[in-house]
Image (cartoon, rainbow, N blue to C red; front, side, top):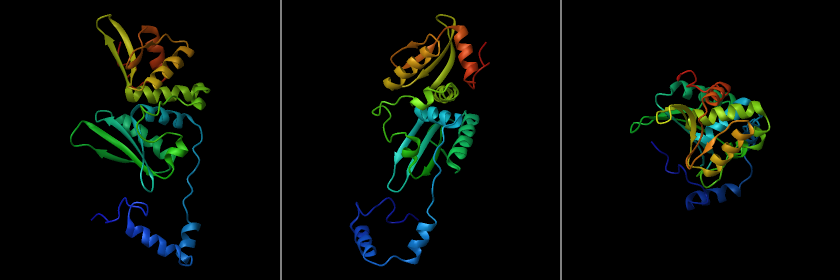
Length: 229
C-alpha cells in the first residue's frame, strides 16, 4: 500500500508544513541525536578507470533525476546485452557501494539499471534532466589521462556505438550516434587529438579507415571486437 505522503514535502503540502512547524518548536529528541550520530556519509568519488567508463556510459544512455529526497540514476540497455548490463552493474556497486536494481520493461525490448542515492549529481558532477539542453561534453579530468579517456570512450561506444560493414563502400565503420551536438563535436576533437581521422555528421561521429577501426576497437576493448572480419 502506497503512503499518502509519498513524494510530498513541506513545500508542497500544507499538512506536512504544519507538522514540520510543530516539530520545529519542540525540544530535540533523543531520536534526533541518534539520527545525527548515524547519518550516512557517502564516500567521495575518486577518479579511476571505472568512474571514467561509468561517466561515458551515462553520457551515452544514462539519465540523472532529482527527486524530493534523493537522486536517481537510470541507464537503459537492449535486452540482448545482458553481459554489458552485468558489467555496469558491477561498476555501479564498486563506485557507490550499493547494488542497483534491474527493471524489465514489458512494452519494449529494453531493461533498466537504476540506483537511488543522495547527492549523486553533485558527487558525479553530472547534471539533472535533459542531456541535450545541458550541452554535455567529456570532462577535463578524463581528457588529460589517456587511461581514463580510453575507458570513457569504451563507455560511450558500448552504449551508443555500432560497428558494421558499409556495403556501399565495402568498408568497416565504427560510429557513435547521439543527438547531442556538443558531445559529437567534443568526441570529434578528442579522436583527432588521438591521431584518428574521424568523420563528423549530423547525428554521429565515425571512423571509416579499416586500420583505424580495428586499432580503435581493440584499444577500447569494444565488446563487438573480432565480431567483424
